[in-house]
Image 1 (cartoon, rainbow, N blue to C red):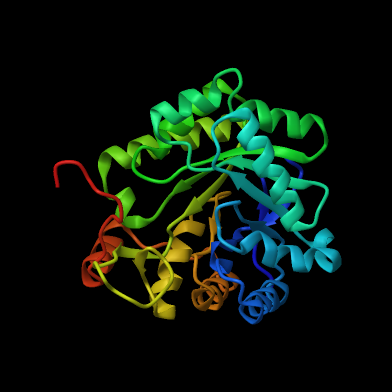
Image 2 (cartoon, one colour):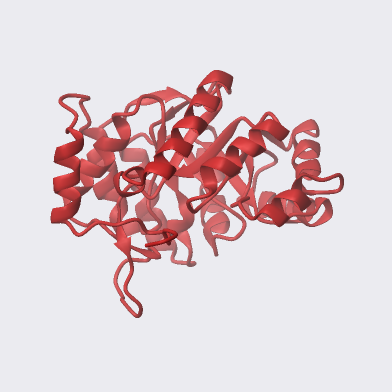
Length: 292
């Protein structure tokens, strides 16, 4: 049941191309967390991505670390923008995760220009990340982002600092937007030239969630059938080297991991086939599109 692995940028880590998006462990449901762990072990997933702001996620993962720390490349994030607040939040993350070091510490959703300026200035969050790396508390540093501006802001971040990884939205409806596609490709070119690891999110997003809709814990409406998830996951995997972070709902995890494990790299769908599939499933970008 092994999933294809690839070099995680220049870190020396060979990660499964599906990374466990641990926002799925938002609550303190230990039975749910243990089901997720069973799936990760069964599919030999070796990379976990969490964040200080993901509810109980860090605490749930911390329960595993005494026994399984060596099996996982462990990443977390801080959403704070000043040195002191980012430093203190990261220290709390270490306590919750029950570890002395994480493999990757990331600035969380650094997209807003004013927040970017604050985080990157002297006395900003970047100073806390650098300090954590120098102290041996984090091995590598990254930056993440949501929304249509994420690729452009990540390019700006990479001009400011040599991050080891980025995280960015990537799915077929987004790449059907010419401006987003061009910005994303420019980011990929920059990352490839500098051996920066590229993590992607929202692979199985179908469309914005209707107001008041219930169901999956994702904030968007996801694809839910195995066939559709296969198409979405394999489409991401058709781009060599990028990683797919799983969706924020444990019930979707087995479907995504099963799709990833069966990827064979054969006969990628054409643009026309993808367009017809998206139309038939009523898919659309999950972020507001200016002018639409």
